[in-house]
Image: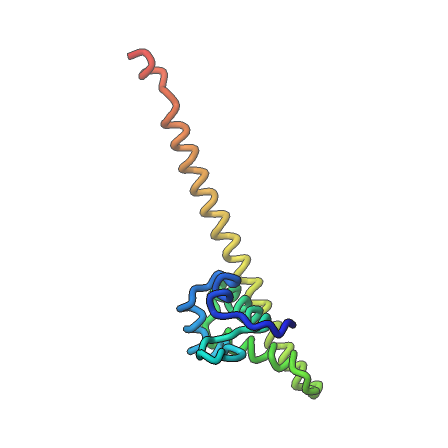
Length: 141
């Protein structure tokens, strides 16, 4: 990825996360700035932004900070240049598969909730359209 460094404001804009949230994730050990400027400002790379995007996508699915940390650790180790033994690599892949399965299950639960919410909104809309139409008895009066 690109070695270009970005300050936290640009990262916040790109990830649609607040500065406070990014700092919180740093304090929680999920992401760390790749460097600091001479003035002490946090500097991030594209790799850091990609990491924050993983976190951002996990959050609405209900994953905890510990689960996020565990998944990021597994993917970091899989992405590292060090050669992993077959059993270790397979164990890491199993961890990633577990998170993929949990994410897929949560997405399906959210789809059911969304369908129910859409049905409810449609019911309210139909009620409003029905009640907004002039009734024949009101027209006669």
